[in-house]
Image (cartoon, rainbow, N blue to C red; front, side, top):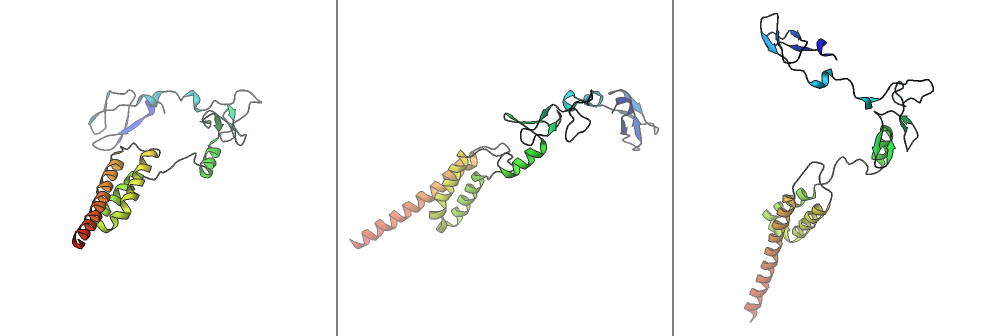
Length: 193
């Protein structure tokens, strides 16, 4: 879209404003002045890698964009793809359809990951209030937290604080149970003697 045909609306009467240069004041028909700024990308020519049109007869066309020149073939299905459709996956070149179908069949596309650290912290926190469960759930929470520390990270950046907090809380619960069992056994022995 060329800059001279770009529109914005007046902040007072909402009428469309026509402007030619970014940063210059524009007067609306209602009399209000507005300064409009245009992103530089609006006036920039499209990138060269968006696919070049076919120049000569006999050139291969993209499977998805028939007017664009093919730059390579998909290593999986053999379809010709333009620069826009070409996806480099490791050392392979794939088309969008093959990436999508490969992601459904394998773990190529990871859309979610289990948050072991959050699960471990939740189990440790719940068993802290239900101490009868802590003897069983504390080791499980520790195992989940360690697995979370070793597993690939979340798709969004996260710290390892939850995992370490779960290990600490579950360890306190487990040590408390062990101490309680030892205390009861020693008290029972003391009564017998």
